[in-house]
Image (tube, rainbow, N blue to C red):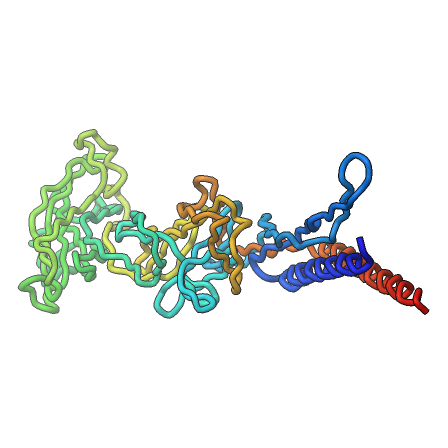
Length: 434
């Protein structure tokens, strides 16, 4: 092997360690980059040169070093809580899927950086505006199986008409029996007690319903449900209109014994007519099965009072906030007090994730070596779980990188010595002719 070859060998060492320092510097520079995955330079010896002569195996002499590849280290980074509902981290294998344009190329990309937010159109996006991919949900919260952009603020809660009103109260058994007839136009003076609730029609419009109670005998009370006629088909605004009436029966122990046979209809304006509306006053002792007669309206000798009046309807609602579970399901909380699943964040995994191609912006793209992405639900099929309100830190270990930097620096200096030594020997060789 000639001295000229030793110069070349030293140069390969300089080049390789320069590459190593570049990789180390990139790791250190991104030590605070969310979701960043460190790399390492992998070296291999250059093809050996065979020498003539010698016994046994043919003598070989190396020609230096090559940078074989830069390997991605996809180990888990530590998770840090942020408290932001749209900040997400993958705990385990896999990457988030985003779609859009990066470096002038449109398509799907993959990332461990879960710094997401909602854009002005309501799409869940990363900080460069690429849209997070997942599965949308129907109005009833059923996840659909087609991967696409996750749009959240377009989700709404449709109204639900009230079908049942439940009353828990006591009607004073000492109340005098009414001598007159209930008058919806003069309800306060023709009844002994009243309470109220808000019910909703099929359009989500609210109607205040006042429930008046009139004692008709020692063991019986009549109830009259009244609302403003302006909210009824054919009604007149400002005119109280009775929509239902019935009779409650109690025994000598103040227990509710018989459910009433209700009469009347509720016909809300422009909505489904008639709207079925049931008033539930408790568990009558003659029911099937027999109840206690104490869970709803009672007839004890104490002042009439309403404990609670509840109903099962609600108006339409808009999205107020979201929460995301470990399976990636996004639950929306709506202004009408309802909540339901509005979507699901997808996770991609790969046969050889370390063969993915790095793209700027903390993104990766598939290559022939990585294989195609297999996209599915988080926390299934070997995919990691999603942690909401947290971010994954870079997996760069600064102490390791600094030690590697010292080693690369010394290796560079040693290879530089190879070059300078070969140069000095060449100088001696040239001086032989003097």
